[in-house]
Structure formats: C-alpha cells, structure tokens
View 1 (cartoon, rainbow, N blue to C red):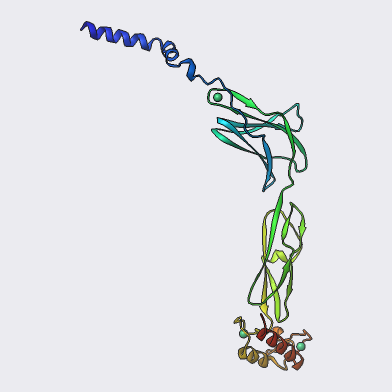
View 2 (cartoon, rainbow, N blue to C red; view 1 turned 30 degrees about the vertical axis):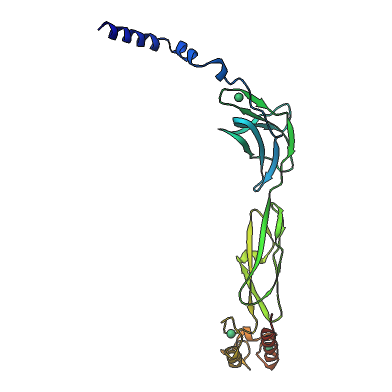
Length: 255
Ligand SMILES: [Ca+2]
Ligand SMILES: [Ca+2]
Ligand SMILES: [Ca+2]
C-alpha cells in the first residue's frame, strides 16, 4: 500500500514538473542550434504561363520562403512552402512582364534556425505560348505559322496545298484569320485530294464517274458541282476535265 502511494506521488511529481521533465530529456548534444546552409546560390527560372520559379538547396531539411518586391529595400511580398525539405522550389506569381524584381530566399529548420541568401534580382519573363500548326486529311500541302511567341502576339497560320491536293479549311475555323496568342493553340489544316470527287481518299474511276455526271452543267443546274468546276468559271467543261486528269496523274505519281 505504501509503495503504491509513493508511486502515485512520484507520478504526480513528474506530471507537475513538465518543464523539468522536458529539460532533463533534451541533452545539449541533441539541440540543433545550427542554421541550414544554402548549398546552391538561388536561381530564378522562367516557367510557362509567365511565372518565375526560385530554386535552391539546403544541407538539412528546412522550409522555403522567398521575399520579393520591386525595391531591394522593400521585399514586401512573400511566397513559400512550410514543408521541410532539402530542395526548394517556390513559384512567384503576379509579376509584371519585363519588370525588375528583388528577392531574398530564407530557409528555416524545424528548430527555428534560419538562413537567408543575399538579395538578388531578376527580370520577370514575358509569358510565351506555342502555336502548333499541323496537317490533316488525305491530301498534302505545306503549313506554316507555328512557333512560340510572347503573349498576345498576332499569329497567322498558313496552308498551301500541294499539286493534286486542295486546301479545305482549318480546325478550328478561327485559325483561318490572324488571332492573338493568349495560350497554347493548335491549328489543323485539312487537305483533300483535288481529284477525289467522291471523298473516299482515293482517286480512281469512281471520281471520274462523279466528274462525268457534272460535265456540261453550269452553275444553277442540278447536275452542276462546284468541286468539279476546277477553274471556277461557272461551268464544268473539258477544260476542267484536263485539270482533273492532271490531279489524277499527280495522285498516281505521289511519293
Ligand atoms: Ca539546423
Ligand atoms: Ca475518290
Ligand atoms: Ca470550269
């Protein structure tokens, strides 16, 4: 009984002295009083979308913080990550393209020891986007206008049908005129075989049959077919046949 009471008293004594308990547990050798070492000089990279990213490393797990602003004396904005790690990567948003900013990185270890870099500067990138221009359809041709430009650049995709092919149109149709690049965009130029009048991606007697059906007809007639009127003079004539035949020949010798 006496020993039980002593045990309880001992326990109460321990519980009533949490600070003493804690102090007795943390020996001098385990206290981390050393701030992290920045093992790389912070680097600022431009990443897609007009953001800038500050990258650095530390020799021990620490958090990530970047103070930045448009004056070295006033780094009034902050971005960061409270997760501890050795590799630090912080994105800075809301920057004015082309403007100069000043920044300083800080990493703090779990014991609160902090290290900061010297103040550096960078110029905020102008965001750039990519226009991809590609080809579709059974025909062939050349496309142009693709590339990477600063935001809001006016771009104009181009399409030029190869001999024996016709350019039909763009997907999406907005690619057919100049437009401002406000994001990555993709334009597909569709080419058909000019002699493929029945649309089966082949050129053969079936297309000749379709042509013959319109031969002699002029615009307004039921038999008239605009696609067969290659010279667009309003009538399907033997002159158009010669053109069709030329397309047919170029289809036969295509690469
Ligand atoms: Ca430390
Ligand atoms: Ca055909
Ligand atoms: Ca014609």
